[in-house]
Image 1 (cartoon, one colour):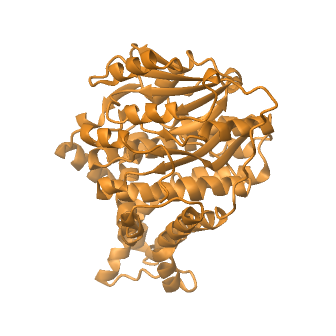
Image 2 (tube, rainbow, N blue to C red):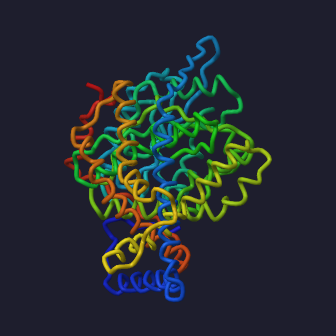
Image 3 (spheres, one colour):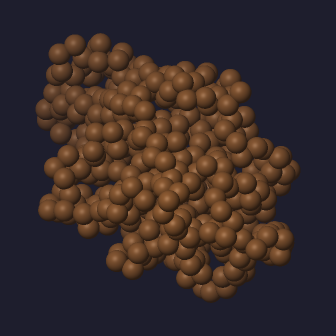
Length: 464
């Protein structure tokens, strides 16, 4: 898979016109029946409202379910502790890597049982290589490995690094993630408790909300996903998934299922699906925490979210009908996987139909066929804020604090979600309409000075 940097991405007026023309054509096909049946607009508006209620209603329900306290198994110190390998692929990560390395040094796990594989790309043009080699020279737990081969992407880099991991348990984290000191210990306790658990997923906790308006809203969005949606799946026994930023695996998983798929843009969701398909457990415990940096510029945010959106579409096309038919998956997880993959495609429909609401200004009847439609629209307007509020209450209960700006972000969250819908449209065009080859665009980090500031952040919980 070809790799490009976020900084290399440029806006082309010609390409913009092409995307706009394709969008108008698709919208025209959606709206043309209204020429012959004016009620068609009401049908589309009704479907739009139902789709939005499904998206936001799921988020709110998940946030409520996430009030459940996660179980906290204790490490069995009578049994021999497994060797753990932490795998960290790194490409131009000098701004954030020092803080990640410092957090690894502070892990509460026996030094003789822990190795950290720092796999740096030979193509890196910053100080990534020097930082990795210095860490390896200073601490026997660290191993610096150079990857110098064509092609790339997160999956390919991780697969390469896995060759050097010798532990029974493998922790894979992004180069901007900083472990809470007890993270490894908590994850290992789950593997000790249940042999059917092949993967443990913790919580990625964004802590750079102050960097920009985009990082602020991205941080709040991630709180909803990481604490609300992902943990709720564990609570009701649904289709649990892990994000590539942080996860823990039994090493035997890769013997059974093979390496990460290098042909999809979200190899983590693909591997999550494989785990369920093979009848094994993927456990989610939000008390296992790594602190992460969210994109702070439009360029880096756009590249990351576009990669995620298109990757989710790729995996949805692969598993939408396949996973619900698997006999190894529970009935609840089957239904939840169908809902999850279906709603990976729904935002595209929402983006194409949301302009319908503006037709009311021209006297077009945009009422829905749903009873209490006006009240449902009002409920829809506040649902994201209610979901965020639930997560904030849970974090206060659990000793986590938030930047004061995060409490204001729900008021403008819908504008952020509207921008997300544009990302989905462009991703849909690339994947389905234009059929463009997948390109892995790396996430640009906050500048070096900010990275230096991040290296001074504590790896402890950001609680007051």
